[in-house]
Image (cartoon, rainbow, N blue to C red; front, side):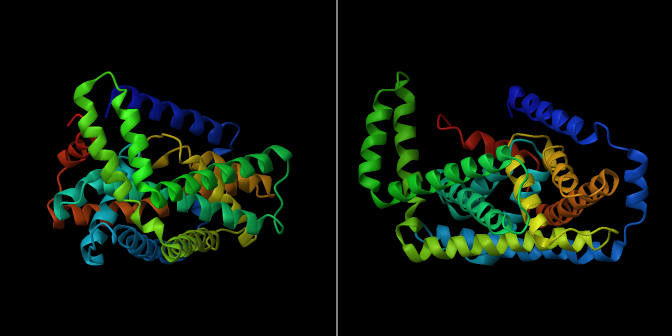
Length: 332
């Protein structure tokens, strides 16, 4: 990882941590955490396996037109990718997934990265859809927040439309990419980039089917409903309650914030927005802070523990994280 990426991630996390902790009564947060009913946290952690299983199925479905891969072979790769996202900044896990599929299945990195980008677009659309469902029951105060939601929807919707067009007209897209690449002043990069663009467009093949698009979107909705279910389970461990619709909005806001580069495990970018949403809907700052921190830990711990087990089982080393980043470079 380049130094500027690391420092930018740490700076953004530090800013969000400051926003999360500024004015927060830490003694009240600690009292709320001590009163947590731990039994409710166990099913929330077990729900991790449900979301990873559905995510693995979705990824296999997107990869199928390029190369069918059995779910038991993809599941460890998915787990290791989320481990990397929780231990390294700048979403290194996405690169690690592409690298591992290249190593295990001889699948081109650019093709698998195309499917990972598509996953992120469908995740954004699913999150925003659930937020719009929640809005009539838990209106967002302030025009600014509503406008931000509309802008985010337009962004993800536009990205999906662009990818659908690329998938529908791959020959035209490749011709345009070839023309643009031919203008590059660094001649040695032209051939690698042209090959990458061809493989990337091949990774979008699943989007040529309306049935595949619908199945991917439905799987994404299931994933994020289960994620919000984790929020609800953790909330049962606390002596306050908000509606499920508020949790839908909280989930959307925190996950939109974690798109930003941040320190490992989305430190700060998850916590500050989560606390802010709960306070916005009437939860006291102490319980809101305690809930958000415990929830963050519950989402982080299973990913790390299971990921470390799969590292040992699959013979993955820490050096593979660096190799993943280097293999994504077209010059390499």
